[in-house]
Length: 117
Image 1 (cartoon, one colour):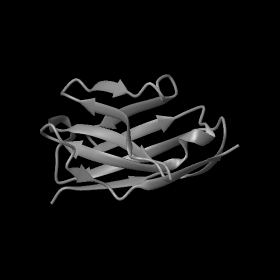
Image 2 (cartoon, one colour):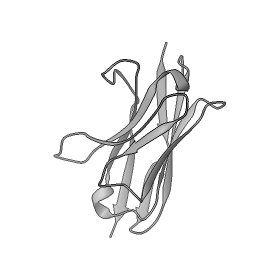
Image 3 (spheres, rainbow, N blue to C red):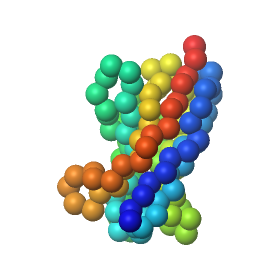
Image 4 (cartoon, rainbow, N blue to C red):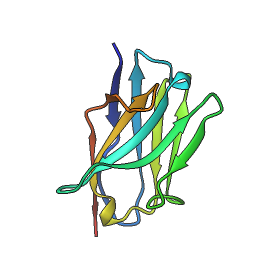
């Protein structure tokens, strides 16, 4: 059974940093594209970053480029999202997701990130 479990969320002041983790079980990270998404209250879920391929290619949304970094540790079967220079508008529930085809079809339960001004 494939399962994703996020952790690392919390309350941080603007300008601060957090690192989110996504522990995967039942799958091999290098065989899947892994993504981070977020959903703020009253807004649609939006893409944040992804990592894919045996070489670990990455892609970041323009809104987080230069501040957030996605990475993975294949030995630990864990994906990370390092978030620096956080802004109040980064406040959201952050979700980890996995896909082997064109659609993300495995999702974690989410972790809350709150950035105070």
